[in-house]
Image 1 (cartoon, rainbow, N blue to C red):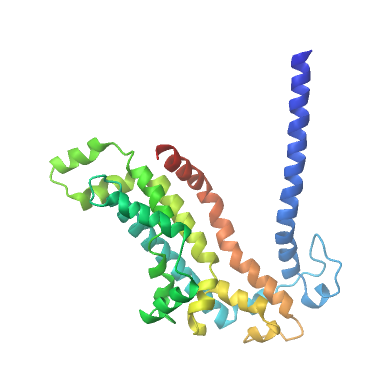
Image 2 (spheres, one colour; image 1 turned 90 degrees about the vertical axis):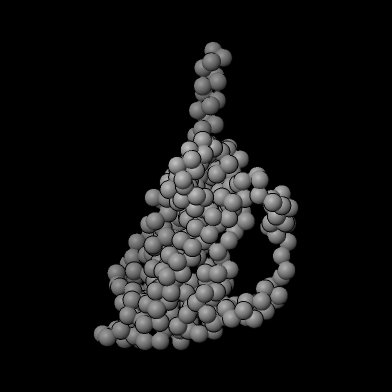
Length: 295
């Protein structure tokens, strides 16, 4: 009887937890679904309200406006470039620094580790940071997306914890065969570190893709702003319709509204990262666990 009661208790508990999680997932996902159906609905019809689950009058005029606007296309190109270049350079640079710091014989290793840990909790502030970037020529420069994000101390800790647990015999045997540190790093360490590399790449890729603040603070040229900054300015603008510079051929101003264009831009902006994230999710979890356990 006690075993039966325990089984029933666990079953009831599981059902309650499942129900709560379903409710939470619904409240988390419904705004995304609502954005999608409104963006695919005719803008004039959407302004009447009453749309909750499916588009009432299907239309793609808002997406035509988005994809034929040269400013939006240019912003997409900037975002893709900064995401690809920024992710690759950051992962490579951080991995190289972490590999050096994983060697305990490096001079002042502990001192620099403590110094880097302090920077995780304290910073010089936004104004000194802005002045520094401007003085070194990164204001209104594409490299402002790349150089400041080359190194992240938290990512270095994850890399370092992983590298320290790699078998020392692999490096020793390679060096006996005449390999130097760079050869060992490229040919032995990197191939063995794919889970943690994918994890850090996911961190950096999502951060670059979602970042709008850098474009707002350090970019004044319209041709250098990423799509997230463009979207931010559309949403934040009191007259969002002015942010749409051109209308595609065959689409009149009455066929789209500022709201429909905003929502369509949101969908187009988030769609790529939503598609990529599930494929990297397994590496994300595995890399974090490996780094934490081995550290």
